Amino acid sequence: MSKLRLAIIGAGPAGIYAADLLIKSELRDFDVSIDLFDLLPAPYGLVRYGVAPDHPRIKGIIRALYEVLDRGDIRFFGNVEYGKDITLEDLKQHYNAVIFATGAIRDANLNIPGIGLDGSYGAADFVNWYDAHPDFPATWPLNAKEIAVIGNGNVALDVARVLAKLPEDMLSTDIPAHVYEGLKASPVTDVHVFGRRGPAQVKFTPLELREACHIEGVDTIVYDEDFQYDEGSQEAIDSNNQTRVMVNTLEQLREEKQSGGKRRLHLHFMSAPVEVLGENGKVVGLKIERTKLDGHGGAVPTGEFREYPVQAVYRAVGYFGSELDQIPFDSKAGVIPNDGGRVLDQSGNQIPGVYATGWIKRGPVGLIGHTKSDALETIGHVIGDRSLWWSPANPEESAVEDLLSQRGIEVIDWKAWLRIDEKERSLGEAQGRERIKLYERSEFMAAAK
Ligand SMILES: Cc1cc2nc3c(=O)[nH]c(=O)nc-3n(C[C@H](O)[C@H](O)[C@H](O)COP(=O)(O)OP(=O)(O)OC[C@H]3O[C@@H](n4cnc5c(N)ncnc54)[C@H](O)[C@@H]3O)c2cc1C
Image 1 (spheres, rainbow, N blue to C red):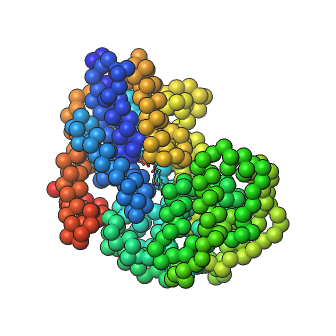
Image 2: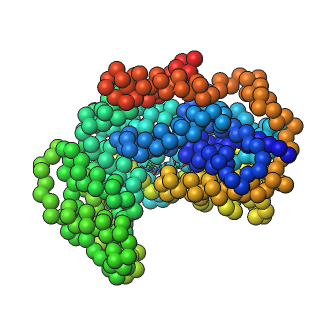
């Protein structure tokens, strides 16, 4: 066989890195032809639809991903959903193998009473709204003055920052008008972030934490009673530079005077959420149980409870992958069961021709850069498994285009994406911004033509 025809499902960083690394791999002694599919009319996955709009430096990774796709040796098929527009059977007819890089877009569950009340939201849904994901509603109920955010990772900080930030400070970003108008109408005064453990156990990264401590017009407040350190904390502080930096940042915050800003961001530690409180079906508060450290950096309950009056609760307790048609799924971990990227059936045997990479392979943790090492491992197996590849009946590059066209699917190819990209840039330019995102699928389709 002289050529590998490879389908990659998901044009987020994991899918794009996998394609790029395979093309550049020195282990490869065969030609390769890669088609990259995404259900969205836009590439870049969570870099476009997860990373916060006010993080232009991270969004800048899009430039590197753009350069990979713009080389012309990877074909982009946007607006094509695996499981609906194209099936596993179709892929077997047209390709030698498939890599699933479908990431995660939903919130993990948090099973506490009241979590289903009106006013209790998943962070992922809010992120999808402010990042203008075309498959999520255009409106978001921002009517709470006091808000609780549950979680001590970067997504919790993103959500809290976007909620607390003065809307005019979001105007330089790529958010479309409906998102700006929504944020502008928010009456919020206080955003409370709750974490179960102490300052030495937070899962933030230093840059995000520092940013949360210095939001224009917002006072960030910490509480002395939350500053608990045990032996486990001390070990972490001594051995881990990142922990040390974060503890220092939080300790400095203890000393800072408040400026009397219009809005406040409260960082609470040693507080485990136990119930979302409601009245008439609506959120009216969050009940937490105070915790204490167990000596090893873990937290145990103390039996002391507190209630915070809030009118909205956002849970930022992790993302979760979605099951794909005809592909095994681990419903506990939210991933495709795999061994280093080789997808496994229920008995733990490798399914020939089927691979996974990125968040759907490893779970929704880690930064964009981690998807690169992930991809390297997976493509190593694709190359090594040559004897297990499928033998497609229609491997010609035109065959899959014909199939999608017969099905009436309006594919957004790379040229069409460049027209959409241009449209977003020109919308931005008119307002002195780098770009303004399109939102409706119909807008994408119109700009693509
Ligand atoms: C809110 C948030 C903020 C973040 N901020 C940062 C940050 O500041 N810095 C950082 O380094 N990392 C950040 N991350 C992490 C980063 O986004 C992930 O590490 C990375 O995007 C995972 O890449 P992926 O390609 O596996 O998945 P994704 O980026 O989710 O890409 C998966 C792609 O697959 C597509 N897809 C899914 N199902 C199908 C289907 N059935 N058919 C076709 N296509 C499909 C999706 O549309 C999507 O485009 C953040 C994550 C979140 C959630």
